[in-house]
Structures are given as structure tokens and as C-alpha cells.
Image (cartoon, rainbow, N blue to C red; front, side, top):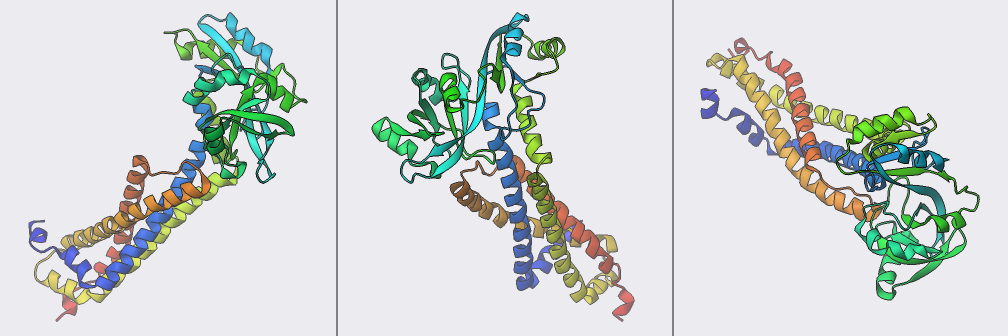
Length: 386
């Protein structure tokens, strides 16, 4: 290694053919950007899908065992929720209604599906700060709070409401008024959300039965062991309900999108293809480099350089390419994330964990390419020089 420090062979090999270096960096950058984009959209899919689950203000959640996604909700008897009040440690309960309604943009008169949440206006169901400030507005019928982080196709609701303090429109052909805004964001399940009172919800969905709810929220007394109470409820309640933590509830939604739809599979395949593309590109560059300089490698062997030294130099060349290709991919992906967020309203942003994962994948990708190219280096025979 001392000899290598005196002669930075890997770096000089890369810098000698600058055109080949630029092509290699461009290829690795392209492969890394594909991985960044695919992982970014996949994580945005999961994060947006479970934002409302993780915003629930509850220690435990009661749902129908067949509940898989907000796209197709399953209800259960509200009586089960009241039964939990008989267990030690349970302080209070409240219920949620969930449905998909048709929101009419009053400016364009276009209708668009929107997720509707029905809550008890006297109890906090979500942790959104804006909801706690304006929830009392929902006590009157036909009043809603609008998700200002949703798609713009719903209309300039947030801007108009901030200026006028009012936004009349229609939801499921019922005249309503927006009396406040909050921020949840669009997801693959819904482009937007509105929160209203349980009474207004039942007017919006007259076919729904008041005693059938989609989610039960359970608040425990301070200091109570959450897992212990959850186990007691799971054992004591009939099997027509399931008891989960809010995070466990979120995982059901996440697993649905990852395993029950083609979206998660497609993203996974795309990342794998990007990885393979990177391996092929780096291998072609390294193989060509070794092939073009095979006599020089043979001369180095004749001068006393060991095959092990030359193999290490080739591996370091691959790792240098990994770093040089990763850096532009990282910064270009930041810009693409910003563009994608503006276009889709999905919470796509760079995360430290993803940046580290892609970096290590790049190192592995280039190391594998270097390992494959090493076979050509073994054929460098000093006898061929003389």
C-alpha cells in the first residue's frame, strides 16, 4: 500500500482518458438518479398514504379486521367501541366515519373525488394544529374544514378562504361552507381531504348507518401500559374488531400499497433495473480500460508490482467512479424532487436514510463491476511484453 500511495495509479488511470471518465460518471449518475427517483416516489407513496393514520390523536385504534385501505373502508358496530370503556386503563373513546365524496370546484364546476372524515366536533380526533383551533366551527351543520395541501384542482380554497373567511361550494350535491383549513396532503388514495362533523357526514352519505363506524379511537389514562391494554382488548373483544396502535394501523395501509397493488412491485423492479444498468456501464468502462492498458499492466508486473496490488488499484478505480458519479446524482435529484413535489403534491423529499442507501448501493454496484473486470487483469502476463 505504501507503493500505491507514491503512485496513485487508480486516479491517473481515470484522468488519462477524460472522455471515458465523463461517460462513466454520466452513466453512474444516470443509474443513481433512477434509484433516487424510484425510491423517492415509493417513500412518498407510503408517507402520504399513512399521514392521516399517524395524525390520529389516540393511543389505540379499533377497526374491522378486513380493513385494508382508505380506498375501500370497512365498518364495524360502534357498540364495540363503547365496550372498551369497561376495561381498566381506558379513559375515553371517539369514532370516525370515512367516505369518498364528490367535491365541486365552484370556479370550474368540475367534480373531483375527495376523502371525507366525519368526527365528533366535541372531541379531538386528529393532531393537526389548525383543526384544534377551528374544530368548534363544525358544530353547525354543513360546515367543513378543507385540506389546503391537496391538489389544486379543487379550487383556490385556501387563498380565497384566507381573504374572505368563507368558501361556499357543494359536496355530494349538498351545499356546504369551508370554515377552516388544515394541511394533510395528497396521496395515492386521495387527492385531498375534508373533515366535518359526524352529523354533517351522515347528511352527505344518507345511506350510511349511524351505528356503523370505520375507526374507533381509544385514549388511555396517563401512565398506562399501552401494549398491555391492547392485549387485554384483543383477548376480550369479539373477533369482529381488531385492536391496533396508530402505527400498526398505518402499517396495514402501507402493506396494502406495497403488497396488494402493482405499484410497490414496479418501484422495486425499477430500482433493481437501475442497479443492473449501473453495473453494466461501470463494467464496460473498467474492462475497456484494462484491455487498452494490458501491456502496461504486464510491465508493472515485470517491475515487481504484484497482481494483488493491481487488483486493489482497479477496485479503487471503481470506488472513485462511484463517488464521482454519486455526487452529481444527489444534487440533480434534489432538483427533481422539488419539481415532482410541485407537480404531484406528494411529500417527496431527500431523506438522509435514502441518500446513505443509494450511496452504499453505488459502492456495491461499482465494486461488483470492478470484481468482474478483474478477470481481464489476471491475463496480463509479463512474458507478453518481451
